[in-house]
Length: 559
Image (cartoon, rainbow, N blue to C red; front, side, top):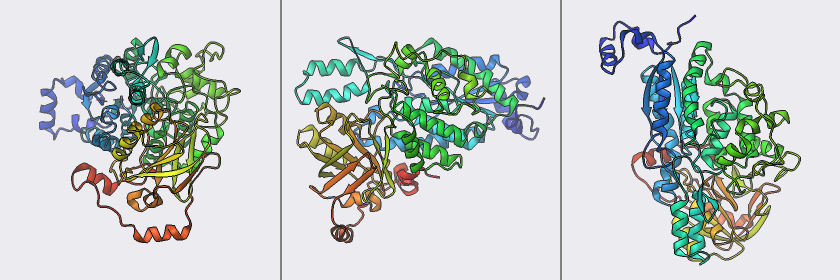
């Protein structure tokens, strides 16, 4: 049988590298270890975020099992940024750009040290696309272990989560709840470790990566603090060794068909609009053609069946407890022709082989997942809108609850902070289209999420009465009549930069149109008077990012 230490032998079996060998002896390796395959165990562990605080414990469980499978494992940390903690602050500008740092850092360490494979343990939102982008670049046997979702909080017998705390501020401001109730909701929203509980970005991407075959079955739905998550960590080294032995690489698993599966599952579950950015970036990294128009086509083809927050009622923990795990949903969608079951996975088996023996979904005993015959919405909630405001596209999340059309007068803000102050001080009238611009990938820079203004809007009871459009993006927790990712962005001279207060804006989610109803002659006059504002940063990482980043319509990649 061929050796499985294909890359590490470049160091361990090279007799002209005595210093390297001396250093390996110094960290505890024995002579007999030099012919073993080496696995990088990468986690996004850090203490200041519940999504990530437990990942080092999971990494240690993996390392124990690595040794038992006659492999060498090295624990490695990369960075993370807490979206929840930075939301609404200037720190949020670093969230999306952190995806590139994560991918670059993992690629650097695994390549430089000639590791034979990779086990990645991400937790928060940008962790997941960051690690999968590095895995595609490296193309070495790899498996992802999702850090898992948080359990729900509880207030007065009702399940609450992180979005409850954001929306509570709007309710307190409208005197719908007391200061004491507000404090108790905030204090009880996050009871422990794990990623934010709804079908927000982390859980959306975890579900997508499972159906794409890059995790073991059930990884996306095992809660962070569950015994099943620990057992998953013990199982993974067996499968990484199998991938090494059978020469199964990420690009054998990540194909156009598996990417389609991922997008379709994300849409069926009502996933975050961030899936659009990340799937475009993932596909680009794999040299696979996926366009915004194709994503719209997928959304037209599949129904919304996930009754999951933020637009629905349930959390990821309910998929674990009520449905008995993501594979039950995947099996149902395969059997009904929504997704393809013949794609290869990290188990060495096909997706269908992984799920064929799980139980069938029961629609009589739960309301978490609806049947395809009685969906929440007959087609997907992801809408790619075009028009004079967004000639290169924009992304809306329309479940139907908020309506399908909105026409209103523009109220324009050149920063999120301005908009938040106005919304919080109850200065937004019904029928307004809030415009937040210069918050795109170049303009912010970093394309921060607009969860704070959308949460204020929902908490204030204006969810169906105002709309919001932006060249920024939205958290998976955002809901309401919102349109983001507008391309070209304001900083690049997109039409969003030319909108004035009281201009009429039309949002048509049935015909996928986003229109500024201003005469072309007037638009041309405004174009001649417009000059790009100076970049908000002059040095550092965000400056470099603003110079390299592509538009949102191309996934905000820096390659």
